[in-house]
Figure 1 (cartoon, each protein chain N blue to C red):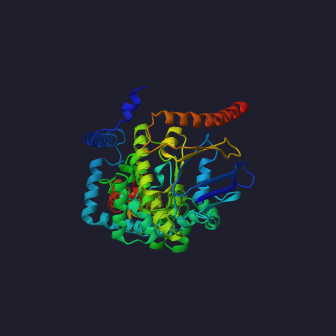
Figure 2: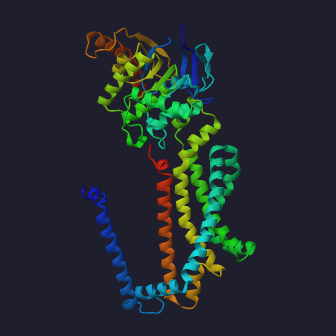
Figure 3: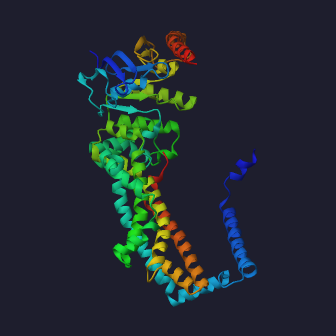
Length: 262
Length: 260
C-alpha cells in the first residue's frame, strides 16, 4: 500500500535527466537491434543511416527549406485560428444568444477531423498555400474557441461579485476580471492546438504539396528512401518539441502571472 | 434611526422554490457590529447577499441610509469565506489597489492608500506576493484591506474566518475588533461560531431553522472591549445564545431524522 506514494514522489532534476538519457539511449539501441537483426531491410533504416540522411539533407538545404515551409504554414494558420477562436469563444461564453447561435456548428464540426477536410480544401482552395493554412486554421480554431469559452464561463463567481461591489462597469469587468481569469484556458487551448497543427500540416502536405515536411516524408517514401523519410519524421518531432518549449518559455516570460493558482 | 433596515424580507430561489426566508425584519445602527448565527442552511448568507445586492428578495425591501438596495454598490463591500474573490494574477498590493483603479484614482494615490490599508491589516512586507504565495489568514487580510481601502461604510463578512485554523482565527478576530472600533464601520458578520459572535459583535441575531427562517431572538452583547473569553459574563452570554441556537439545530436534526 505504501509503495505507490513513494513511486509517485518527485525525483531530483539530475536523476530525471539521467533517467531520460537512459531511456533515449535504450530506445536508439533497440532501434539499432531491430533494424539490423530482426527486420534487416531497406524499409527499416538504422539510426545511423537516418542520422547520415539527416545530415545530408541539412547540407543540401532540403530539410531547412521544407521545415521552413511547414513551419510558416503552421504559424499563419495557428495565428488566424487563435485570432478568430479567442474572441468567438469569449463571446460564446459571455453572451447566451451568441452561444445558442454558434454552438450547434461548433459541436458538429469539432467531431469532423481536419484530415476529413483535406480533399474539400484542395478542391476549393487549390494545391497552393491557402488549403494548408485553412486546415491549420480549422485545427486551431475549435480548440482555442472551446477552451476560451469554458474558461470565461468558469470565472469564480466571487471575483465577479467583488468587482461589482467595487462599482466595476461591464467593460472593466470584462477587461480586468474575465479576460485575465480566462488566460490559463486560452493558453492551454493554444498549446494543444499547436501540437495538433503539426499533425494537420503533414496530412495536408501528404496529399497535395510541392514542399514541406509532409511532402518530404511522402516523396521519400515513394522513392523508397526510407532513411530520408525517417529523417523527415525525426525533424518533425524535434521541431514540435522545440515549438512547444518556445511557446512555454514565451508564456513563462510574458504571461506567468496569469497562470498563478488562486 | 436605523442605518440598515430589512423590512419583511421573503426569499425563494426561482418562482417555484421553497420559501427560504419569511418575514425577516432587522434594523442595524450606524457603526454597529452585528453577528448573525443560525443552523446550517437557514439562509444567513442569503440575507447577506440580499443586502449586498447580489440577490433580489421575493418580497420586502432593504434600505441602506434610507435608500432601497437595487444592486451591488461600493458602499457595501463583501468579504467572502473563500478568498477566491482575490485576483490570482495580481499581487497583494495590486489586489488592494483594484477598487481604487475601478474608481479612477490616480496611480500614486492608489499605491499610497493600498499600502496604508495593507499596513492596517499587518501585511507590510508582503505587498509583492501573489495570493498563491500567501497563507489562508493572509489572504483574508488582503480581502479585508481591499474592503477598507474604499472606506465603504458597510462591511458584509460571510464567515470570513471559517476556513482558517483556530490560532489564526483568534488573531484575526482580535485584529478585526481593533479595526472595527477604530474605523466605525457598520458590519454584518455571518458565523457559525458563538464564541466568535460574542467576542466581536455588539448584538447577535439568532435565526430559526429553515425553511421560512427569520430572526428568532437578538442577544445584546454589553461587554466592554477588549473582551475576555474566559470571563463569567462571556460564559453566561455563550450559554444563553447556545441554548437558543441548539433548540433550532435540534429542530433541523429532528427534520433530518424523520426523512430517514
